[in-house]
Structure formats: structure tokens, C-alpha cells
Figure 1 (tube, chains in turn brown, yellow):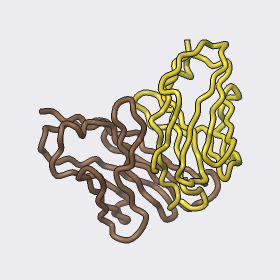
Figure 2 (cartoon, rainbow over the protein chains, first blue to last red; figure 1 turned 180 degrees about the vertical axis):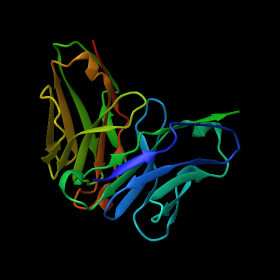
Figure 3 (tube, chains in turn orange, green; figure 1 turned 90 degrees about the vertical axis):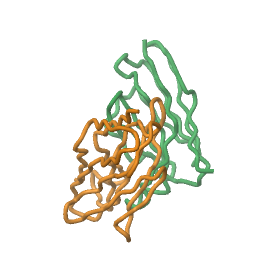
Figure 4 (tube, rainbow over the protein chains, first blue to last red; figure 1 turned 60 degrees about the horizontal axis):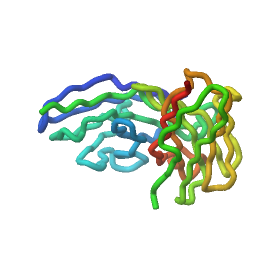
Amino acid sequence: AQSVTQLDSQVPVFEEAPVELRCNYSSSVSVYLFWYVQYPNQGLQLLLKYLSGSTLVKGINGFEAEFNKSQTSFHLRKPSVHISDTAEYFCAVSTDAGGTSYGKLTFGQGTILTVHP
Amino acid sequence: DTEVTQTPKHLVMGMTNKKSLKCEQHMGHRAMYWYKQKAKKPPELMFVYSYEKLSINESVPSRFSPECPNSSLLNLHLHALQPEDSALYLCASSQDTASGVYNEQFFGPGTRLTVL
């Protein structure tokens, strides 16, 4: 079965500073990785995804993430954050494994990013 | 059109009421999902429909009854709910469930449900 660990439940940062939100996964088969953002009282919006190919993926709003197979990580980064980036961020994984993982996204517990002026 | 719509946005109901949540997508997706999300928690999968057939029920109590009338619509019928069922209910769709690569899910804005 697959699992996702987001190492930080809360990350406070000042505006224009860089930020990294950490995500580690566990799976015995090939994975597909996603980062979603959720603003207060809204649904989830896809920031970026890794399906195959280049390990550095770029997403919306200036975010990027790097897939590291040896470290089983998919950390999200932004070089300079804005107040509007304040939100909750979820890392998620899916696989081609069958059984109980079939057709499912497995989410991490989420990281609340708070950007201070 | 890459949008998943959900109605209503907010719903308050008593424990004896019957109500329904609706979800619609026009992306041609063949997989649709219901999630329940409590505050400061990740979405928790409830049901998955694949090609209009229920493929996953995550041991959800029978007071929640899903329905997929066609490939674009997904309903969640609610009856005799408990206060602990109060949560944000999210609908999502994806191209398919045949492969993990198709599990990029598009989420609706959710219905905020309060059970009194």
C-alpha cells in the first residue's frame, strides 16, 4: 500500500522569502505524485504533478517540485512567496497497484503555509 | 471546461431530514468521487464511481447513499445524519481509474454541511 508523509504541519514564513514544503512517500511500485492547494472554504486546486519524464516539474503560481526516487521525496518549493500563498497544501500519490490502492489518491496530512507581511 | 460544480454551497439540516448534494462535470471524465473533509484534515475518500458503476465504498454508513445517473452527474443522498457528519463534502472527477496516471483529480468547491 502507498502512504504519504508531510513532515511539517505548519510552516510560517515572511513575504518574499523562499519556502519548501516537504513530502515523502512510500510505495513498492511506480508512483504518480501531485501537490494540491486549498484556500479557506474552497475545494482543492492542482498545483503540479509528476507522471514521468523530467524530475523537476513546474506548476502554477510559481511553484515547482522535484521528484527524487532514491529519497522517495517530492518537495514543493517557491523562491519568493506572497501573502496570497497562505493556504493548506496537500501532497498526494497514486499508483498502478491493484488491490486496496486501485483508483485512489492517497493524501498526506497537509501543511498549512502562513505568509506574514 | 475544466470545472466541477457542486450544489448547494451550504446546507443546514436536521437529523431527521432528507437532502441531496449534487455534482456535475463536463470534461468527459469517467471516474467521479465523493470525499468528506473535516477541518485541518485531508479529504477522506467515501465513494468512487467508474463508468457510472460504484467501484469503491469505503465502508461508509448507509445514511449516505450515492447515485450516478449518468457520466456527468453524481449525487449524494443524505438521510438521518448525525452532528458528527458535519463537514465539507467534496466531489472530484478524473479521466479514469484504470491507471494511476489517470488519477489527476479535479475537485469541486465543496458543500459545507451542518447537521443540527
